[in-house]
Image (cartoon, rainbow, N blue to C red; front, side, top):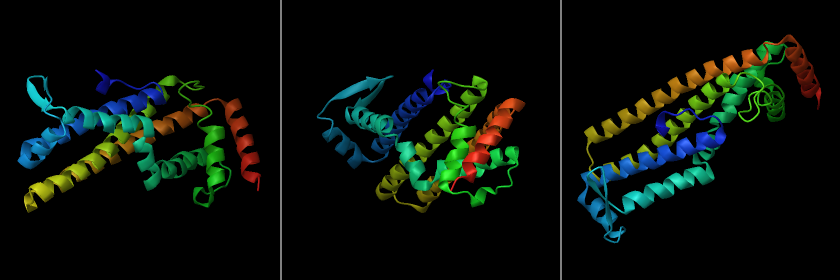
Length: 234
């Protein structure tokens, strides 16, 4: 089943995220139709009276095309990447985790907090992405697949948090109560904890990738020389 499959490259990761976003959107919209008659009527109106059966459940057309639009939007526009850029998630990870651990390996006397954007990109391009490309891996593909799968789940959890938050606001407008508010906050907190745990696992896999990169002395010496040259440029 696709939800349990491990993506082997970025394209497969985006496909899995998009399918997950479609399924999550469908579930959340269906939930809203079940708890609010006005919302169900609205969904029926924009479905032009068309219904379909899914495992014995009657669903209107809007519950198909709206999640499909959201899923396609994720696939085309990489919404998870836009959210990541907005919040600085990947940028912070690349600097504070990847670049920091590589500097420890190279022992160049540089502090990660003193690095500028150019220096961080130089470190990643010459010592990380150069060797962990999913299309042309230099290290063991297994390490790359593990890290890719973990990031895939992280982006799915992030998209779920965004979609659930939007649905939660609508739900509170329809069914306001302190209990419902606490329930929504509890689920959001659960998703945030899951994201933190997934990120910790991703860090462990990143460390494994870096160890594999520096496992050969000749390659390690070459990387250190390239970094010294790159970081010495003005």
